[in-house]
Image 1 (spheres, rainbow, N blue to C red):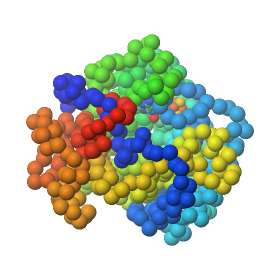
Image 2: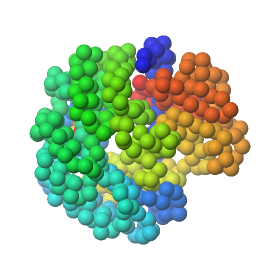
Image 3: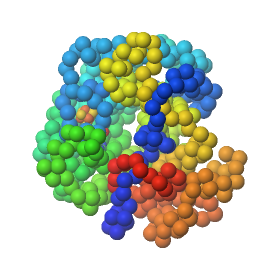
Length: 458
Ligand SMILES: C[S@@+](CC[C@H](N)C(=O)[O-])C[C@H]1O[C@@H](n2cnc3c(N)ncnc32)[C@H](O)[C@@H]1O
Ligand code: SF4
């Protein structure tokens, strides 16, 4: 698959990643607490019924210079202890607001580095969740790990607690790249820990990689991705390095080493794409790849793929997301609620019995429709507008009006070979998949007069 150069030059513009609609930089300052509590209670009567819990652990042992995540470097056990206790208290605050007939379908631990916590803390939080909520039969329980802290016995304990998905950051196998970005070395070799995870039947493995870092070049990256494919993880994520030094100041220090150009970045991704598809991985969304047996691959085939802040998922496991911990975003059907990013404010607020929600957004009916279309594009690369009209009980032309889509733009996408669009059915081509953010943006009326900052599309 060759990505056309003139297209990436044209479309490599600041564009939302659409992990939510509207994107997080549209959220407002939360100033009406009772209204927010009502929104949490109202989610009990909305779909999906299932509960998806997100737990944010904002701690790491060493700062990677490229990092765009919400994290803090600390080894202060008091800070960590207090944070864990506060999460337990946040569960106590949440529990009475959630109807007891609802079940957990997903628990996702993200960070930072959740496995930087002692295993006893993970046990405390998991047991607290299990004793307060019921779960569906096979809930997805996942953790984003750093191999610098992942031992075999830690993995074994996670399995005992019900974890069935582990993900960890490799980023690159090239030592020069890893040293330049200040990446902490794995405790065991990546091969050894992968082998241990794969010795379990029901433990799915995802590996994260990044392209666009200093000293990455085609030859070396080819070796990295071939090695990755050879390890046969169930899934891989190959992220475009988001360089946002105006938000993440430490990223600025990478500029002195020279960052790959937009063209070099596309070539790196293309290389990864070619290798992974040759190894029978199916591209999922923007930057994920899943093996042929993976549930995501099956869901894509049947156009049943979904996405929430936890990542791609299926209809069975998707749920409204309730976030615990700093910076976590609850993603309810009609509202987004984001916790404060400050650990101090978080602890103080929970101690006072108040959810530390700092940002919110209530999603209106038109925005839900736009969100549905954008999600279909980003997940299934396919939208049957007739069906969307039917399920929403509106006329198909009304959808075009609400999304404010410009048909001339769609014609251009068509002429460029990025989409098929006929009889109100939109389908992205293989080339179009690389530009899915741009195609989704054509259905986002906010992008017509956008003044907000986003990372570049590619
Ligand atoms: C929470 S971390 C994963 C767990 C652990 N902290 C680690 O680094 O291995 C999530 C992933 O986000 C990706 N990531 C972090 N900063 C990024 C950035 N600026 N641009 C693109 N991807 C980024 C990395 O691939 C990383 O593995
Ligand atoms: S370990 Fe992960 S979360 Fe922590 S600084 Fe590195 S990339 Fe960011």
